[in-house]
Length: 309
Figure 1 (cartoon, rainbow, N blue to C red):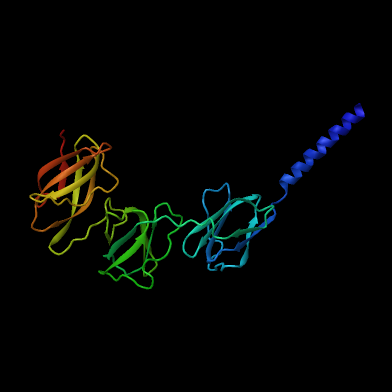
Figure 2: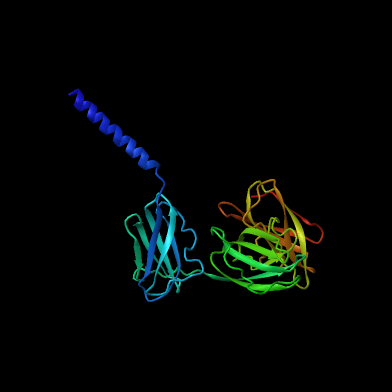
C-alpha cells in the first residue's frame, strides 16, 4: 500500500511540474491565411483577440486582396487562440468571422454572403476661416470616440491667412478638429458640435475659449461678453435675441453650461447698429426657460443673469 501511495504521489508531482512548465512556455508564433472567395476586392482586414473590445489596425496596410486570392497574416507570439476577423470590401461592406481558433484553424475564407452594408452616416459641410498668423496645411476631423484622426481634409490644398475653405465630413455631430500649420505646429479642439458650429474661426485662443469664436460679417462687431450667473440655478443654455426680432442667435455657453455664481467670457457677434437685446435663459436638466429683456450691449460688455422665478 505504501509503495502504491508513493507511486501515486510521484505521478501527481510529475503532472503538476509538467503543467507548470507548460504554462511557462512562450507562446507560439501564430498566423492565419485569409482567402477571398467573394466577387469583390477586400480592402481592409482586422484581426483581434476575441476578448478585446476594439479592432486595432488594418492588417493589409496599403495592400488589397482581390477575388480568388489568399494572403497569410502573422499574429505574433501570443497565447490567445480565439480571434475575431473582419473583412472590409471595396464597397465598404463588412463581413466578420467570430471566435476563430487559430491554434486549430489555418485559414478563414470570406465569400461575401454575410457582408453587411455600413450604416448611413450624415454628411456635413464646415467652413474653416483662418485668422491665425500662419497658413493651415492640414485639417483633420474625426468622431470624438475614434482611435485616430483619419485623412487630411484639405488634400493638396491649404488655407492662407485670412482665407476660408469649406470642408466635407461624414459622421456624428460631435467631432474633434486638428489643424496643422505650415511650420508643422498643430492645434486641436475636442468635442465640437459641427451641426451647430458651421463656421469655425481659427484664431489665437480658439482652442481654450469657453465657446468657439464667431465670425463677424460686414456690418457686425465681434465682442467679448462677460456672462455672470446670479439666477440661483445652473444655466445650460443662453441665447441673445435683438429686441423687435424673433431671430434667436447661437447658444453662447456651448455644452459646458454655467453654474450659479460662476462667470464666463463668450464671443458674440452683433450688428453694429443693434444695441438692445433680450436673453433666453435655459435651466437644466429640466430645460425650463426664462426671458429677460432690456439688455443694452452697447453700454456694457457684462451680462448679469438676474435671479427670478
